[in-house]
Image 1 (cartoon, rainbow, N blue to C red):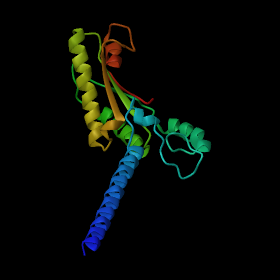
Image 2 (cartoon, rainbow, N blue to C red; image 1 turned 60 degrees about the vertical axis):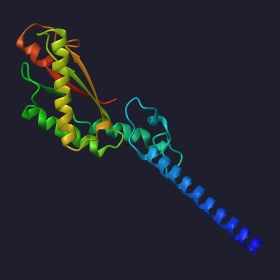
Image 3 (cartoon, helix red, strand yellow; image 1 turned 135 degrees about the vertical axis):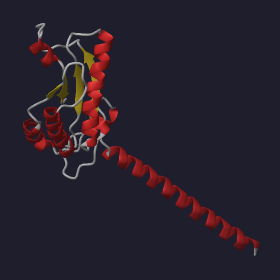
Length: 188
């Protein structure tokens, strides 16, 4: 009787141990699957991890190698042409013309899973360096907030504030200042 009881106990322990190992492996598989399918962040090492491909041979993003050139050229043609939004003096309010541009970019980003954008904030030369960096940051955050509201995932956006450090127009007049009060949308 004791031998049968011991044998049954051993079998129960082995079955339970097998179930625990199986559930651990399933958890690892789902974590690995989530890592492979989650959107990479700019500068993140996850961008270099391979993604399962149903049509080998594929690159590290899971794109069939033969179609990579076709996709990159069509992607460049799809990116909205207007990549700057402008601001009024000392303001970080999104104007109606900028709203339309941001809507076009939001549509592009949400329709292209590998698309990422860097929002670069700029100001004109008037004001202190610290004030202009803060104003450029508020402008970038305003543009980012609109893109988030329009459905763009936050991990697809990178923001940076340059303040007055990178003017596109070097004159000291209203026309030049207007061109320098901007947020640029840069696709890597």
